[in-house]
Amino acid sequence: MNIFNDIGTITALVLTLAVFSGFFKPNPLYRFAESLFIGVSAGYFAVIWYFSIIKPAYNSALSGDLLILIPLIAGLLLFIPSNSEASYSKLRFLPAAFIVIVTTAINIPVYFSAFIQEMIRTSIIPLVSFDESGNLQIDMTINAVLSIVCITSAIMFLVARHRNNNRFVNTTGEIGRFFVLVAIGSAFAYTLLSRLILFMGKIEFIMNAVKTGF
Amino acid sequence: MRNFFKNISAAIARIPHWGLIFPILFLMLFHYFAIFDRNRAEDDSELNVAPSENEMKVFQIVDELPQNSKVLILVNYGPESKYELESAMSALIRVLADKNIGIAFATMIPNGVESAFTAVEKSIENGSLGRERFVYGHEYTHLGFIVGGNVATYLIANNFGQVKERDIFDSSTEIHQPLMNEIGSISDFSAVFEFSSQTFDGVPGIVSFAVMLKDKNVKKVAFCSSDMLSAYIPFRGSLYLDGLIGGFKSIAVFTHEFQPSLNIEKQYDMLSTILFYIIGLVVFSNLIKLVTKDKK
Image (tube, rainbow over all chains, first blue to last red; front, side, top):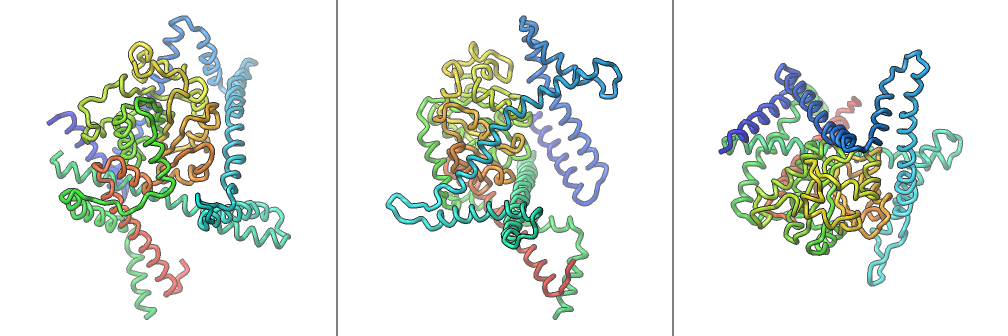
């Protein structure tokens, strides 16, 4: 028997029940758990950021690596108030611009390769699939053709919003609208599924805690 | 007849929304007491789902990992997806430990720091590792939280030597960790696995990593939670992803294959029943609307 484990389990159990009590209506216990969660999260993140960024940077500076001062100063520049009248206040744009440029430079190749080049390739190729013995794989072929229909019609749906006088574009766009709704619906269903698993896990945790006498 | 359905509809309308949670709760408890204990007693629980072609591909990748090699596991999930992904990660750790494969954990989200340790603990507690000790620094290590999203993936892919200098406890990996001594770059790993419950600027972490990776021989496998499936599925079969275990069904199949002692099939049974209840509820409420011609 470990007293710290037991205290941890009981605390987790009480807080879980407190959060579940919010299903019915907000109550003091629920609000307490909510505030505690926000506070603990903030504390946890502060500690993680300190040990992941600030402490290693500090250690580097102490060991003579003064290059670390550049990001430190750049970070401090971001704190210059935006309504400041002083001429040096525009210095805050320098680190902001650097962040935008670096993020863009890294993200553009990723977006282009992953979302345009590779996604089109995997949707279309192979259009007609054969198994190892050379027989036609009907399901895979239908899947590939359907992918092309979905992608084309979904693009047409977006085009139809601007060129709504073309009958072909409108009809294809309506099919695309259906596929877009299916995509949104399935994303919602998957999110629900994920939350249900979380809920199930918490119920199992409560039952195990009760069953084993904490 | 229509009045009868209208009365039912009115009765249902009087139930508050939170009241719908009680049947779900009932189904969970019913499964917990009835099916779970029965499965434990019989000890021959089966998952009535056959692995798909994609899942078989991941099985093959895991089976083909060479003995005594090293793998990198990116732990990009926190407590919100613990119940979904932890069992699969625990199963993977067990397989890797059986083959004496060294594991380096790293995370790109602050929430993921603890997840690796809890998965290792789960493997040890479950007694499935087949050994008494799983030594930090020799058999596994944790490189901690690598800040920057896609910038972090760039660092991992192209400048791993800098990433691996210090571990999560701020100890030098060169001095204290024999495991990391043989690792100079990302190419020294035989595979990279990502356990994910979020994307970085809309891009799955493993995809961003694969785009930036110059060595295309490193196997890349992703395990994602159900809510991330729509972000990961488009990359299934692409050059950037050698294998994908996505969603609870695939995770249950993987876990059942590699660590049956976790009894994931009971959770799968429970979830299936609850989903049937929800589908039934939706169909039933729409049927009533259809019969009563209620458009609300």
